[in-house]
Image 1 (cartoon, helix red, strand yellow):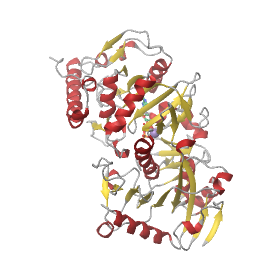
Image 2 (cartoon, protein in one colour):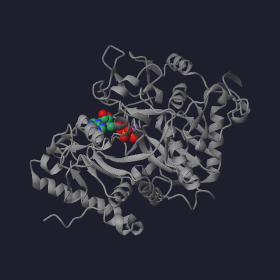
Image 3 (spheres, helix red, strand yellow):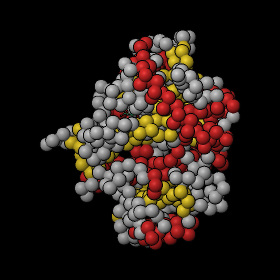
Image 4 (tube, protein in one colour):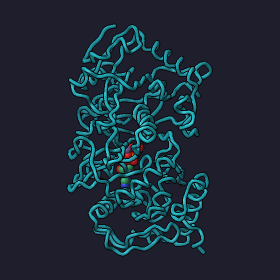
Length: 537
Ligand code: ATP
Ligand code: MN
């Protein structure tokens, strides 16, 4: 085996299980970038970031995500469409098959940490087939110092081979691509897909099991930032609802944009060391922090160029709507170092309601908060296909069902308890449609959403008059600085009030239907937080 780079003295090449080839240990980003450019997998952009094509997959593949069913997981994991069981022996075989795939190849290893709170730090070793995937790992996880690298011993290992294709009949997968977690061996296999998010969300899924189940730390799919006076805010929400966009606030220090823990002593800590932002329709004017983070070292995925140039065309969705960029968190100017803070004061549930029913901001009671957390609602428009006018409704428990191995009530109970202990305000923010559903209304202006959040954070919504929403019962402020009062009650923004009432009724019905499977676990307080169908006509 030929070896290059900086490797651990404690756990080196012999520990990899790969017998021959060329291994690049912990290469600095510059070298990975040159190698990806030289082998033709990456292109240089005008701004200095490189861009790559993730191949067949430009997003995660939830149906191909498995968890090994064994003594640790059998009785603790909530087996469902997102937590699909995988046989331990089949895993063992596939693992060795993947190791043999690496034999004789040139590949990349990176040692990194997850969890900014040293008490929960997890050592991760990622073995990548491609240089750019290794750059992603550098950008997204917490980077050890040179000294820490020398003594690094991996606890978890991720094997990532986009070019490896499973044989479903022999290997027990659904199709050629797969992402499988084994909690006993502490190994994650990602094969057949180059989508980098699979690596990130694989580690996230592992932490979402380990932290609440074994360490009494709540794991959350949320972004977080902290104000000048040390007041922490967290933003839950499904994909595309605004976690990354809204947590990048020049007046507040960014803690992280996607994955956090909440400890027993009220610390909020980031799991990651980088951000993974959507770049579709990105502009400097609307999202300056993210725009300026796209520089040398950042890794763009699946974006197009303006004709005849290497200027990124952020409006180009020819490859996918899900164009992305990863960068180390310190590419954002105002950040918390290390990525943690105390004292959570405000929680925002972000939803992109393409039906235009939910208010732009509303305040929730503890019962409503628990109800909406377990529901995890958002509705998006599928994409930009011609003729698609109906939004698709999603209910994803805890705003992240695909990454939550435990039953939703486990996370919900922990959150409810913590919210009460910390005395937080809970707000629901609709970053989706206003003035009608998709096709009639328009997406809420980012400027207004930011102003609403700023007002909530600054206490400017503490002493204003509130109205309760007729169907959802949530409290809507009637005034807010820098936001026109007319938009605060969504019904006012619809020309056809009857149509609004119908849509609100339909949405409430969908919430209640979705909640049926959880009602057995819910107490009176939570059930009282549900929308009510009796008020309409
Ligand atoms: P993921 O979990 O997939 O990373 P996310 O919750 O971080 O998703 P963002 O990356 O912040 O989502 O995406 C929100 C997108 O919606 C951005 O492209 C942003 O520009 C756009 N957007 C438009 N209007 C608004 C608004 N009012 N509030 C928030 N985002 C908005
Ligand atoms: Mn995000």
